[in-house]
Length: 179
Image (tube, rainbow, N blue to C red; front, side):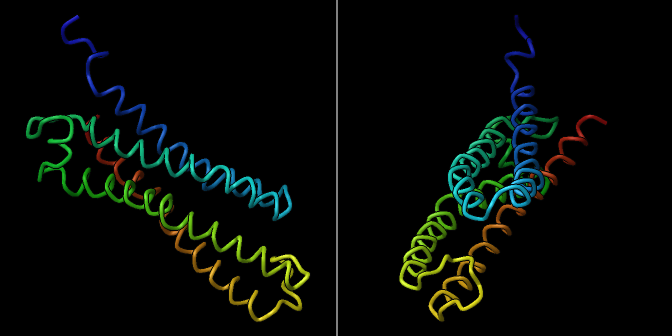
């Protein structure tokens, strides 16, 4: 079966790309929107805290697979050497690396910081006799924690959009190969 497509990295690369972009699009623009409109804030938060490690891990893993299975061309090799080739810097390396780094930053920096902050908000809520989302009459400490949360949430959302736009940009690089 010499020359078989099964032995080529191409189908695995395309399938991985579709998985990465589809998952990122669906989680970012469908799942979170439907959930925020359908469940209470506490449930929304609990579900997302369970989903995020898998989601950010999948983003990082698929980015790594994309780098390892980068298809070759007349000018470049396939695989990691093709991924790192100067000819692929802007169309391949930068968008995939941006996706990889931003998903790892979400997984290992933003998510743990957010979980720690949520524990602090929960504790402050117990001390205040209120839930963290009760804005009226919130203590100065809770307001400070909520501001910190808003900042972390903004960071995480920005990192996630970096992943999404990195994948989207890489899609144009892939599309050029079909012309």
